[in-house]
Length: 474
Image (cartoon, rainbow, N blue to C red; front, side, top):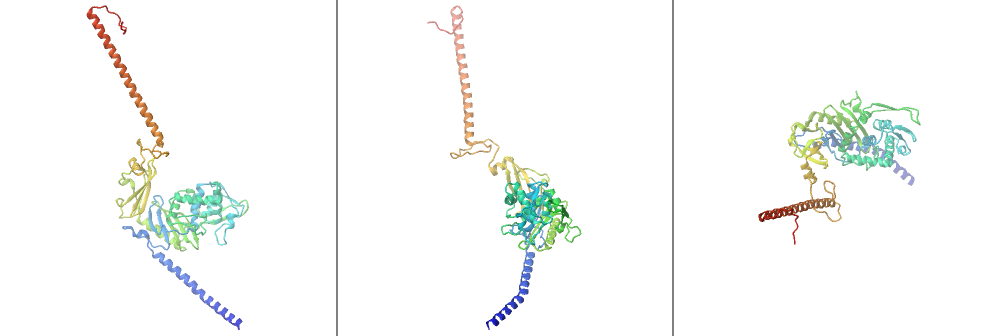
């Protein structure tokens, strides 16, 4: 009887599972569609700006369009939300690598650079002990998105930095901060999922802008096919293709102004995509995070078309120069504005970079939206008001005992006190010398007057004229 009950229960359980699975799958798919639709209906943050053209709806959870030369943000949707980047991480990996190595450097593959791979991770089949050069490695990194190559690059460049793989990751975080990234943290060189490995759409646009300054990296990203020849361990060639479909001429996603970019995907990150474009007027970086498959390309194209169709550069040289600025470092400095928004509508923020050199950076805002920034030389008056630094000689009050206080010229306070005391002594000595000279002169004049008087008296008495010795007889 118990056996029969168990059999019946087992049949019922299996029936529930079998019948429940399609419902569960359908529920998951239905939820995903709801989330996708909800994301699509979420308006861009820039749509709330008065007089700003309404941006396109995009499926991506976060998206941004940035002018790569001025830093102007022209379209933003959750641009500062922290999300997982997946393989677009490799743009930062490539940047750190190219800034700290040469194309001819050897890249050695260790067991650590390969053993972590899962069956579905992107790779090109490198083996422990195999060696390729950095040029080949960077092509495999940016075109094939090879995860073991990313690890090997980090290991080898990290060794040059003095600390191996960890040193490279530290350099990624350091470089990211230097570029102005405020919402990123990097734990690996390939972008495989880690809860502490995240970025923002805005931060990725900053990284893409810096990558675009390296022609060697742009050249790699524009390569459609690449072959790594035989190595020390493998006699066969390895050939791989470009993954970014906006570079595939003839493809439905091809975009004529695209000059580079990087794709990414993990289950946790969704589809991520960074794309750089140049239409001859503006160089743009488009970033979408947590997007859906080929929708990432549709979203990116919509953002590019929106930006190129609604914005233009406004030369700062043709506008009234702020009184705080002596000159713009770049004679082609500009802001990016849509029709209806004028230069006089902007506010500015000045950052002093070097008070002694008088250099700084000015960023212009329209309703708190960055519309461009550029390097400037600041007036001495502004430098003094903003930092207290001045080129004029000043004697300030004494500091607290024991402090080696340094003023603008870099001289400690005690040194300035000694200099002032020395100067005072010199002045006092000069004054005393002048007084002594004057006293001697007056004494000499008095003696001369007495002599002339004595001679005059002798002549009046008819006495013989004799030489006056200045001595009195007793």
